[in-house]
Amino acid sequence: MSLYQDFKPSILFLAKFIGLYIVLNVAYGFYLDASKGEADIMTKWVTEQTASIIDAYEDKITTGPKEDLKSIFIFKDSQAILSVYEGCNGLNVMVIFVSFLIAYGKIGKRMLWFIPLGIVVIHLFNILRILLLFHVTISMPDFLYFSHKYLFTAFIYIAVFGMWALWIFKVNEK
Image (cartoon, rainbow, N blue to C red; front, side, top):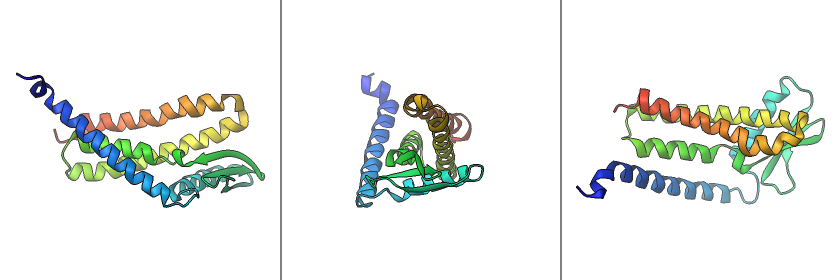
């Protein structure tokens, strides 16, 4: 047997995943370009949702644009605490999630409900991630870089891996 035949399922998976990932990332780039130098709608929405949750138990929480206009600040008592940039809106993680699912199997009824469920789970984990970063910024600012770059990034990707495992082992029709 040829090497291609031995690895054909893996090669096809990788080709579909990479192709779809590139297409969806290009679409994401057009989406960001349409924002015309301002923070995109999803970033505003995620920031406002996070601020609303914090406002339920903290006083004087507001949001507003950062000087560069591509970020949104979360303010406490009119002091900027956390800047939420377009990369923090969770859309790129959702692109990776969807690309994997579509590359892994055929589109069917189960996938049509699992993809929106996964997107909601990723969105909720992302809001929790931003909320935790807000509190790290206030209580342990020296820990912010590590928390943002490694700890809470791992947090959201563990959720994605969990959703993929659920798909592969429990939900998928194969």
